[in-house]
Length: 171
Image (cartoon, rainbow, N blue to C red):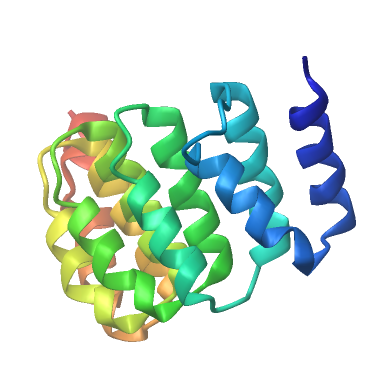
């Protein structure tokens, strides 16, 4: 019963570009293919290695569709693959996710924006830096460092000197 999951694991190790299509179909749970959740997750893990650093419109669109899954683990797995692809065309979708309901999605999306390393996300990250939710502000701060634009230094210094957590520590 675990043959598909183990086959996906093996394809991840081999990083064969030809495996992209079958893995995308498995991750998507294509019609006529009864994929269990664990198999779909294994396919996403495999795709992360296969698609790393590659721009592929079809793969990006399939993964963006999986982002809408009611299964949070599948959605976050798809987000992880999109980040590994480092496709600048994914930035707009990840930016929208960072503002969507749900703390887990917002936090993961903020980290993803940093990993994408695209300067277009700086306004989103600077806005998130001032949120009242420490987990989101922390993700934004980390991501600002990953983007690597020195223009954000004043905002980061402000958080060090006057952030809510600094106030609690000094109290």
